[in-house]
Amino acid sequence: MTEATNSATAAPEMLSWDSKSRRVVMLYVPLACFLLILLFPFYWMGVTAFKPNAELYDFAQHNPFWITSPTLDHIKHLLFNTSYPSWLWTTMLVSIAATFLSLFASTLAAYSIQRLRFRGSQYVGLAIYLAYLVPPSILFIPLATMVVQLGLFDTPFALILTYPTFLVPFCTWLLIGYFKSIPYELEECALIDGASRLQILRQITLPLAIPGLISAGIFSFTLSWNEFIYALAFIQSSENKTVPVAILTELVTGDVYQWGALMAGSLLGSLPVAIFYSFFVDYYVSSLTGAVKE
Amino acid sequence: MSATTAPAWTKTRQQPGALARLFDNKAFLIIVCLAPAVGLLMTFLTYPLGLGIWLAFTDTTIGRAGIWVGLENFEYLMGDPIFLNSVFYSVFYTAVATVGKFGLGLWLALLLNQHLPMKSLLRAIILLPWIVPTVLSAIAFWWIYDPQFSILSYLSMKMGLTEGPIDFINTAWPARWSLIFANIWRGIPFVAISLLAGLQTISPSLYEAALLDGATPWQRFRHITFPMLMPILAIVMTFSIIFTFTDFQLVYAITRGGPVNSTHLMATLAFQRGIPGGQLGEGAAIAVAMIPFLVFATLFSYFGLARRKWQQGESND
Image 1 (tube, rainbow over the protein chains, first blue to last red):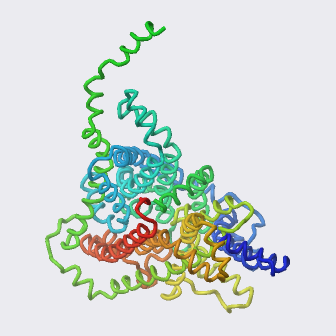
Image 2 (image 1 turned 120 degrees about the horizontal axis):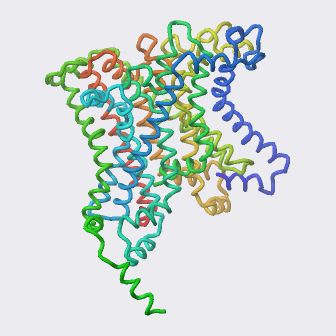
């Protein structure tokens, strides 16, 4: 559509002012609306998190879109009166452990499917792809019974071991595509020089696949951080909960919701992912689009 | 020179140890490499899937192993208005949200595909709703939909559109639409960015040719952009349908299935019956009832992929 619209605006019979105003109406106005709607909840989250309660519930005297006397009370309340730091710590631990476990498993799997080329490797790849289509919503009940039987209920291990079910298929899929882009000749040269398969993997393929590994890692980390249903079903005690679950189950008390604290918790819980994401935006976008294209 | 290097050469060629030889054995290596991934998936995905289907035919509750009851769970559910309502709402939610997400997402992708300043920054900002944990943005929506202090009610009252606060989540239909809106909001970035990737692969020469032939903008969209986008559209749509249909977080965070069970999706109902309610068998039956819908969506993807192979030839694997 780019070229189409550009050439349309450049068509000789159109006046320049016409194409310019047309461009504003057709492009910038809708884009601004999209941005406004997509970002407003975050703005609202941020504004609420720093607003004192007096302003929060009084729209008549205070303009709700702005804060007249910002306060850190809600954040202080979270950090010192609740177990928020331990929720953050659990979430971090679970996400990092699950990410490394999945990266390890899927790197090896992707390498063997793409590079060792055994009979039926395509079918293994297809099976792993299909595994990605099984959503957690249909697995959590049987998994809950398994987690109880294995004695993992209410421990972080329940999450670390179950998160790879949705991370491994995705990472494997992404890495297969990545390994495919590395010239096979490099490995052949190494084989001729007498390197073993493991040496090839460690010294040639993996260093070349680092961008792919970073993409897969970031994706896994954010997916683990966002995970909700397993964490809700397998964790019971307050201090072992992950941030999304804890905010919803521990901070929502009674009939009067403490919106300031809720929003501050959401903001703090979103920040680590958002910061992490901002460092690796390009990897993230490439993994998202790469996965779709594969 | 060569006389001095020759001995050193033979030294590096010494026979590797038994372990190294074992790891050079291709069959052994394949098994070792696949073991972690396949082991994890078999234990925590394939087995639970089978276990879930088995549980659906038993009357298991928490703390008591169930016995085989055949189709009893399903027969009970067929007569349960709450379950039937959740099936209806799951289909409705998926259909409306998918149309909304793809309509708006495609539009956003087309906008982003034009020459814009700070394009990569824009793209990064637009993806934000998708990377922030769903539950946390859902809580923000919950606050936006608050019956008393909703900012949207404030705006509409200020502008004179409504007399009192808008009812977002206190009665059935407004609650259903509010949830769908939140889902669309969260889904747009993913759709837009993936479709943008698809748009960027379309060769400009096609548009030039169409322009020379005098095609209108609509014709160019209908006969070039859309068919070329079809393969990616099919895949992204399959994923979107599967994950919208089995959505849990948004509904659980904003309404928990209320008011009066009107916004239960099948996933939230399965959770409510299975985990807090303790009826594992019944919960599993509700979850298993989602499978036919998912199979349908997957077949949709398969044919989308087949179509791509046919369009672009064998070389594209």
